[in-house]
Amino acid sequence: QKAETEMSAVRLNRAGDTAFAKVEKVSSELFSLTYGAVVMQVIKDYEEVDATNAQLEKMGYNIGVRLVDEFLAKAQVSACQSFQDTAEVIAKVGFKMFLGVNAEVVKTTGDEFTLQLSDNPLAEFVELPEQYAKLEYSGMLCGVLRGALEMVQMRVTCTLVRDVLWGDDVTEIRVVLQEMLNEEYHDDED
Amino acid sequence: LRPFGASVAFGKRALLATTCMGVALYTLHIFNRRGTCLFYKEWNRPSPSRGDLTQDHKLMFGFLFSLKQLVSKIAPKKGGFYACNTSAYKLNYFETMSGLRFVLCTELAAGDMREVLKYIYANIFVECLVKNPLWKAEDPITCPLFTQHLQNYLESIS
Image 1 (spheres, rainbow over the protein chains, first blue to last red):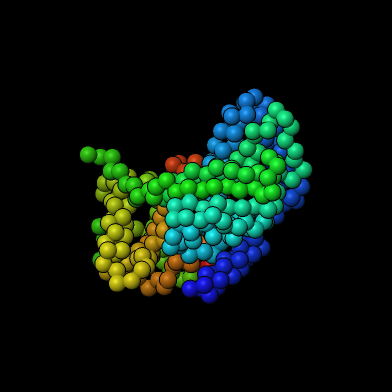
Image 2: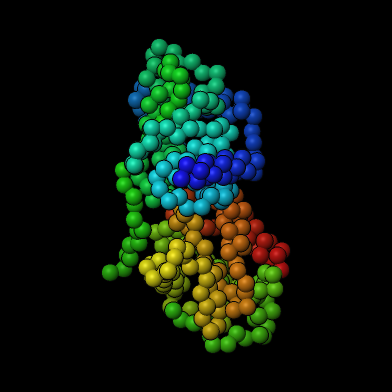
């Protein structure tokens, strides 16, 4: 069984590389600086750190609901058999395709997993000053995951639990499955 | 489901129909997960809808929904349905994991249209609509870029 998981890890890595090769690329500096400008603007608009965190997550959600279609269209992955499969696909194919980085899946249980990023292009060149110590700078990623997973029938909560910007060694996002959503079809003529 | 006529008329109408890969196309529907018909295009439909089109779309969606459930219940092994035939036409179906349903009705002689539908999803739908900030997931598709690309693609592979 170990050989099987190793095989599928290889397959996912290859799928991630293929998908990454297919997408248009932009300069990573431009990307980091643009994201920084977005965060600065949201801080300016919302003033408080909590409101900013909420807004970044919400923006991420709106991105996620669309991103998932591009992902499904471009990445050659078959349906996931378990939540752990979902975790591996997100880490090896999703992050690779959209951010060009490899993420690791750590601390998995049946209904939750943690994504660990050693390299976070969003937070390149960033230092958090004292008054923004509680800012979830990469909170948008949490929103993206939440939005994308909701479109494939999984309601999750995603939290930024460790961040290099907070002094930790790695950036970690914890994803917890709340419920699987069922097919909804409401016949509105009764 | 009302059949599109027992025999396909090979007259003037058929000549005007769009063909792709030499296959005659009849209609295309795109539904979202909720059942909203986002897009409908008709090239050739010998027996036109008697009621209004919205009822037809609901009928189509309901039929596909039920068929999908049925197929998954009685399937001997995993794998959803991707086509079904009547005596008059072939219905080709592609569903994405995000709940979008692409339904293409073609003549019976059509081969496997799954690659065509996947192309429409991946290269036309995603590029023109998902990436378009003005289009929201509940809206019917009125984007001219989309219809243009779709038409070009379907004609180009004939």
